[in-house]
Length: 141
Image (cartoon, rainbow, N blue to C red; front, side):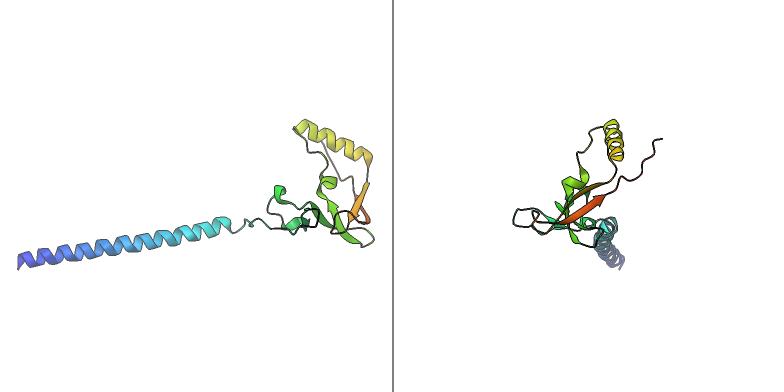
């Protein structure tokens, strides 16, 4: 009888071990999926912007998942209510390579004051109005 008990103990221990491994594996997969969902909760997948006939992407800047994913033509509205798109390159201008260059560009832009840039139709070539870019504010610390 003692041998049967030992055999039964081994069987119970074996079943418990297999059950533990199975539950542990399933639990770890659930935790990983939940962690992945948590980590990606605030990250937006890359938005696919439509393209016009010139191959330029267009849409709302807010739909971009990163600065690199911004559309070529950004939806904008002129002061008079005309809706269209501004070219990203017109809004951004040249990108600085150093912090010092960024300060110099900012100072130069502030000295110019407001500037008007074309407001385009979805085709990226037809000008439908003008968009005013303000000089903004800048304080040096």
